[in-house]
Image (tube, rainbow, N blue to C red):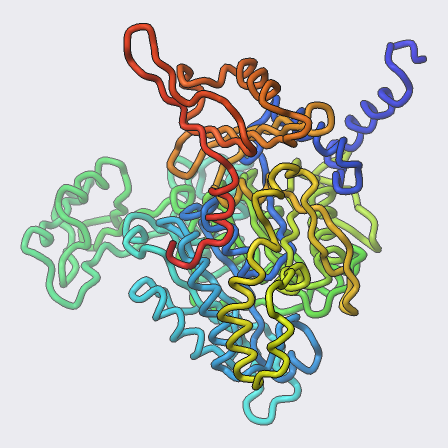
Amino acid sequence: MLGGGGNLAEHNLEKLQQNQPHLVVDTSLYPPRYQQKLLTLLSEEWDLDANTDGVLIHSDNFQALNLLQARYREQVKCIYIDPPYNTEDDRAKGKFIYKDGYPTSTWLAMMESRLEKCIPLLNYEGFFACHIDENEHFTLEGLIKIFFGENDLGKLVWDKKNPKGDAKELSVQHEYVHLAVKEKSFLNNENAFSRDKENAEKILNQAEKLVKKYGISEKARKEFSEWMKKQKDFSGGERAYKFIDDNGDVYRPVSMAWPNKSEAPEEYFIPLIHPVTRKPCPVPARGWRNPPDTMAELLEKGLILFGKDETTQPNRKYLLKENLTENVPSIYSMGGSDDDLLKNLGINFPNPKPIKASQYFLKAIARASHSLVMDYFAGSGTTAHAVINLNREDGGNRKYILVEQGEYFDTVLKPRVQKVIYSENWKDGKPMPSEKQSDGFNGVLQIVKVLKLESYEDTLNNLELKGQADFIGGLPESVQEDYLLRYLLDVESKGSLLNSEDFTHPFDYCLNIATDSAGAYAKTNIDLVETFNYLLGLRVQGITDEREKRGYVMVEGALPNGERCLIVWRDVEKMGYAEVAQCFNAQNINPNSDQYDVVYLNGDHDMASLWQNEDGTESRLSLRAIEPEFLRLMFAQKGE
């Protein structure tokens, strides 16, 4: 025993929490009982979904997008993808799990089906960004115009500064990022597609340093102007901020001339009076940019610059501190590779997308600190890495959903996310102390959910065909195929994947899941509780998992329509009629309670859903059976 009380294990755990607050714990390595207890404990403190920072899904992306429809409809701020480019070179090198090099029509069908599913997930201000090269550039452009119409924003050109060495004609060194938005009208209300001025902070810091040294003086202004001239890596727009005003603020002069070819209205020609000579100043040939009211407001705020006398045309004063963002240019130049970055993480993956490029694009289209970013061609996990880095940079709370079906999900994507959560910098597979923190690795606090969905092949492996399935062997091949698709899979396999009997013991439901490409499989537990949450679109707020002791799991949350919902799953042998009644009474679940709008329960029961009150009125509890709703949502046809 230790002098401070508690045993050695508890002491060591407390010490570990203090010294390693961002150490990532993979709960999949723990027994199910521990996982269940952890979720229950977390639910006592937090809203689970609200505090989940990332979702990693190991699945075919079409299947994953289907599952996410109800839960994330109109919630995603940015869909950012880097799909297969459909090139012969990629096909030969096996870069992608898709059979790259398919004819354009097949590649187009693959992209179209995913686009159809992802667009409903975008919110009103949501962006869609897709990397592509010259091979399918025009094909993708046509597809985006079909789906987004006038909300297509065009494309950015990414100059990779690395010409292709095997080019037979022009040596191409650029790719494209096609952009679209869910609703273009919101762009008119704000500068939503912008970026931070890269060197703004550096400029402001230099001005502040000189003002502290010399005061607001001509010497400070002269040294500042000379310093700005030496900054060759600054853009022309940044170098224009070379002046310091009487308040110590950095500014640039900007013309106030009417920008259109046609002449401005008559009231836009009223001259400004020079504050010293009291004489009118020259008016631009086509008039002022702003109406008289705006000009008067700018004058009152001291945001109009006059010359020494009335002979100079006045300019607008733009303060750098009020203009820290700028429109994103159509060309982005950034070369290099992230091979070394992944090598330092101890991860091997060919041709990873450079994280600096991803951060650049995401900073423009996911500026809001609470943005939800989705990537359904996740590859090595660069998008999650970029989102985590952006949050480190500005203290944001952006979240991410990544989907990848490749075998490297467990060996590349997931470990990469785990490592960059724990430490910002790595070398030779080891975390490196952060320059920003004297006593740590600049880690972040995150909860990440990892899901694996059964594949199409897994589903086929679990079909149990009955009736006269054997007789089709003697039929012509075309008839066999038609019989299989139109009748056998629909009728004779019905109930072999999931039926009402499976809900009597919902925590024991299993499927045969492939374990390798050679056809081996293992009986694997399937989480019906989590599946139903997604089918309903439930925003999970808390889970009480008592399946081991009492045979039930209760999930609380909100449905997409805002209704408060409780889902009670039970093993009917452990929790019969009497136990259900006791549980409902303990939780005050009855028709007279307004705690929940909807309650779901599996198995037979005798719970009352209608009460007759003493005053003659009736109270009703919306008590629904899980089984029919689950099966309806699980096997619903498109459009239902």
